[in-house]
Amino acid sequence: MSNEQKTIQTIFVPKRLQIDTVVALVLLRKYGEKYYPGVSTAVLTFFRQPPEGKTAEQLEQEGILPVDMLGGVFDHHRETRSQETESVSQLVAKELKIQDDPALKKLLRFAYRDDIEGKGVLSKDAIDRSFGLPGLLNNLVRQYPEDPQRVFDIVEPVILGHLAEETMRHHVLPDDYRKKFDEGKVDAFLIPFRGKELRALTIDSDRKGMVGFLKAHPNIKADIVAQRFASGHINVVTNQQLTLDLAGVAERIRLAEAKARNMHESEFDASKLRDRARTDDFPMWYLDDTSRTVQNGGIDPEGTEPTKLSLEDVKLAIVEGLNDSDSQKKERVSSDKHPRSSKNRNSERVVYTALFVDDVAALKAAFPPVHPNEQYHHSTIQYKPDDGINGISVGAKHSIRVKGRVTTDAIDALLVEN
Image (cartoon, rainbow, N blue to C red):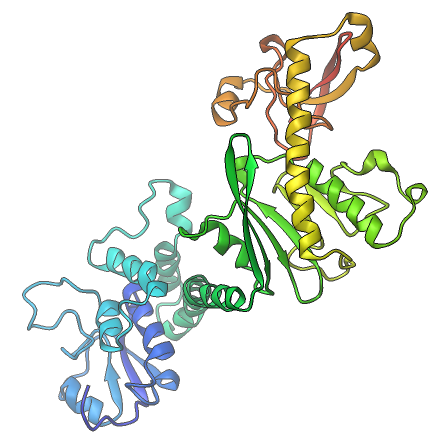
């Protein structure tokens, strides 16, 4: 970079685009304006062979910036290097002083691995390799051999989309969290549960990626997050790996909603307070067993009425509801270990929907039961009849065909296949 840098009007680029070159160009155009005025809007000119007659330094004085050619500052093939140890995108990042930005770490590593190590997509799966970015770029280069500008225009938004997401994760969300924390809009607390403590947190924030950030951040690792948007909508999201039963939380939230709306007991069906999905009495709340959430509209709440509850109301519902659900589960397990008489069991027979599968061993390995003979209400168990009831909470709806039925004095189960 010259001390008397001219405004960059043109960027010289090799005609056959590679991942490393495309990444370098994206970084230059997005971050390079401070060091190379005009580079963000400079015209790309492509060459099959590098133009002769002028050096990279001479071209820069004419407002032309060579990338990956002519031995310039952004040519990782130049003769002064005995061997290629840096990608052109790394050279660009260093020149622009952004090489340590955590938002660029994956992208720079990706370009280096593809160009210097020659690995590209590491997966051996044919589909992964076909639809990985290096493979798609090669397809585009072959499809439009005389139109590299079109190829670049297709791939650039993909890389910019990745950069936007990484910038959000490493900069925007942490900054917003710190701001909300300083403003007293974050409440972090612990919930005693099954002999351990769950990390829970409530926050006021309109950032759609905030929950994922709070669950993934190594210093936070939230197990449960209640996020309130400026619109008043509140969503309760949990770590799916914990497979928390949120029926009790949904019940407490719906009861609190009824109180906040001055609803009389006769105005809602108390037997449906723990129901999955949405109920007619409280359409603003949705209990999703698959995602382990209780949502008041989700991240795009348009069309859903905001709750009347405060974050403090929801916090109380979470604490009380979780332990209530766990207590009921323990009671069911205790009943399994100490069964009542046939007469009593018959009067309390429960209807289950089951998923009939051949490879039950794989299912057991993937979803080990928390308790022996664990059972879940409202169509959420899977088992193979001759294996006994091995409850696996799935919470997902399946496209199924009924194969048969098993009826005893304790159970009425459909046998289905997907």
